[in-house]
Length: 129
Image (cartoon, rainbow, N blue to C red):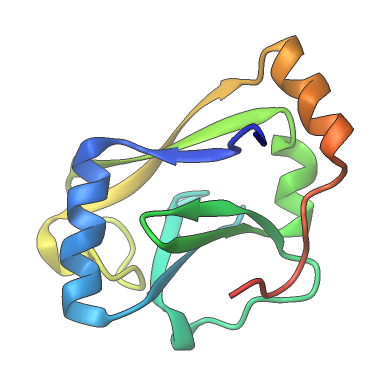
């Protein structure tokens, strides 16, 4: 079984279900950009164009999670957990009107996890859904 690169907390999972009910299919994109630093942005699936160099990290609650290729080079050794906290984040992400924001909690992969991922080969790039 592949080592998951991204997972979700129960609170973020509940919020994702709510957002899916309001907006339909979603996707996450994590960049190192200016908006909220490197907070994960959640968009209706048709409202964000995934680039050829964006890295597909996996799926949480039926929602694909991508990271910009340049950001992935810095974070490739890191397991991500999507969580939710009170407060307004970027106005671009679907949860902004709810008075909460998604954020990333991270940890380094263990040596065993990293070796297993290396054996699986590099993650996919570009649109996967």
